[in-house]
Image (cartoon, rainbow, N blue to C red; front, top):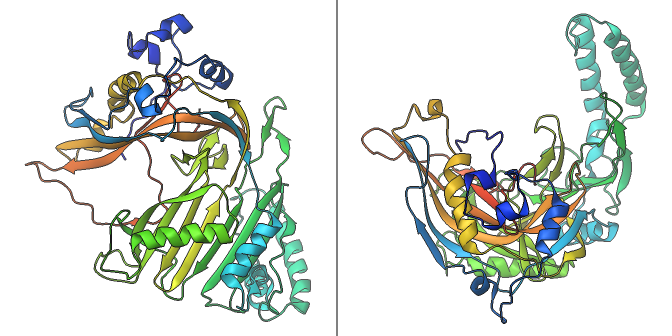
Length: 493
């Protein structure tokens, strides 16, 4: 995706007259990306206009479809247009909720393990790093670095040598009692606490179905138990330590490889030629799985055909089903893989919640649940939302601005076009300022679409590489339905 970094913009300045309440609410220009969630809550809590029992679509004046051409852009070779269906929750109002990062209970881990791996001999994966072979490999590698004076920190300080020698001495003691394989099969999926490098504590359970490679069944569970604050170097200010999100996953590669490529969206297709199981049956089986595992408020909503080959006519096929959490029947959408505060490279992160299931005609092949959410108190029961016409005005003015490519990025192409093909209103997680554990669920409009690249003469460049499953569909623009501010998918505000 070709995008130019936008350092500072102002909604009111760019959209003079578009949002009539803008100047009245604040004499100065409001920031494009607002971090003042308290002000947003106060705005949302204003009594909404009486809707006389209208649906949300009716009260906000939302059309079924939007057609807009030639939106404002800077480059003559870059164009944006909207030709999109619009999806709105089937309700008469949306709420704002408190939300926090959750972890997997021991009972949940055991239910999933018994369902996917019951009757299969599974071995403690962590023992892989304590076998004679792996310990000896680590000793040999560290000794080789010592012999070649290959410092991990570059030339200069030799303090690393004493650390390496002490670690080698410890590993040699461990080697005396180390096993040749992963030991006896595990009897139950018990989470065990471990301290990680940043000083935090995690609970981990990891198992595979063979005492040595290759194995075909894998089961992993990880929780974040304690991530304390730490003083930064600048003035002793405290910041939250990087959060490695809770995760629960299972993979069976006996029929289809773990690495799958997404071929096409088959949601709604009656039948496909590649598999006997229909797309609807796949969705139904995943819904039944959630009931068995006692996973509440999760709805399978989309199914893709996937293959372990990039070619659409080769390889082994499977379904890849995406699910979303619902609150009061309204879906929560995840616009990216994670949000940050600080920089993407060195900041703290909080993954958006995802739940994905793989299956074929023979049964379930994979289950991956990352960063579960706990939904708490309702902040605003009936949020006051801007009419869709105001949201569309924001989008028409900013879609070309926030997605404008650099001219150097267009050197290969005669034209680059973004076509917005679907627009959705949903709940979306916005973290509290500088938090990777708490936040809000807020009504947000997302504008999704497709990119098209053209060579001189008008020939469109065809995509030749299939996307891996699990790749997030990112919006080209996210607009807060309450105040019209633009929501950052990476910062979350």
